[in-house]
Amino acid sequence: MILIKNATIHTMANKNFENGMILVDHGKIIAIGNVVTLPPNTEIIDAKGKFVMPGMIDAHCHLGMWEDGMGSEGADGNEAVDPVTPHLRAIDAINPMDICFKDAMDAGITTVATGPGSANVIGGQFAVIKTYGNRIDDMIINKCLAMKVAFGENPKRVYYAQKKSPSTRMGTAAILRENLFKAKMYIEKQNKAKENPDKIPEFDIKMEALAKVIKKEIPIKVHAHRADDILTALRIAKEFNIDITLDHCTEGHLIVDYLKEGIQKGIILGPSLSNRSKVELKNLTFKTPGILSKAGIKVAIMTDHPVIPLQYLPVCAGIAAREGMDEEEALKAITINAAEILGIEDKLGSLEIGKDADIVIYSGHPFDLRSKVDLVMVSGKIVKS
Image (cartoon, rainbow, N blue to C red; front, side, top):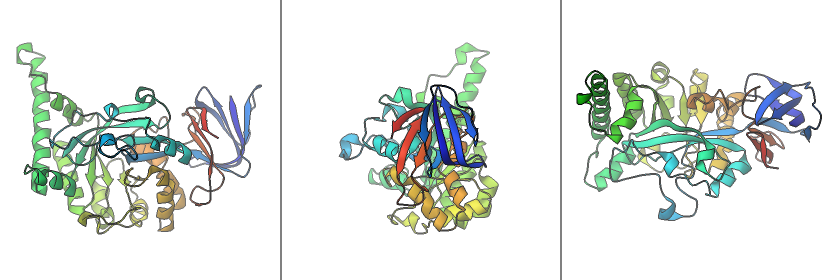
């Protein structure tokens, strides 16, 4: 067992403790509070004067998909020769040996959602993984979190250059609709074949993957920056009665009321710590997280690593707080809000009894650039000290 004591604990569960204690056993939190019964032979970590919080969660990145300093040989995030690739799975491309996994550990980021990029209309399946380990199979929390879908400039640019569709926003929406409809028909044929096995449709790996979306087993994870693209994504989700998370949502502050009507779990914002590298980023601002949060929308903040190196996730949240987001909400945006949007809140995102002991000890407040990560624990194992 391990006991962390004398800490300022931010649980992200609406209860904080001064001079608090956390008891960990077999990878789980088994007690937390100001007074904890101390079993014999317990390893004690004195965190006096330090800030303790859950391991941080980056709700949208491409960790291990574009390896650091590798160029094309380490770029495995876009199969950019076909605009429809729902059968691709992130777990088959993530390299845990990428040095950026160490960067994640050193920064206290213990969980990420990582997956395909945005070259394709339908890019493939995102995964949720822990950032500690040598084999991806041992790191998986959810191997099929969501289906990546992209709107806006990226698929237009990629396929215009190949003289293929889509080269317009109309083309992107049409391709998505076409394939969702095909998946719907594929499911209907499978259901009819239960009574007449001779009618079973020929196996189609793409439709098998998209069937999970139609059945609402997974959401579409939508890359959309511009307001019109965001609204198109919501329109199509409503047409097919499918679940959706909005990622990037750069112009979300321009359409707050429409987002409140159409969004289900929350919005994943970012990367905001970047330049306006393309037209659809012209309204980029760190004020967006605060505006949406104050409107009652659940917000997570992401880096889109390697666009922004993921070790700057707390920096992004800190700037959001400086620009108007409530400080506690900014902390939630990289912990419990991210967990809830990703559907992993039963295990991660807050310090509560029964949850995974993913814990970070900071020398000071994580939004203070002078603060250092003194200790990181993943599933009860100290991986940085």
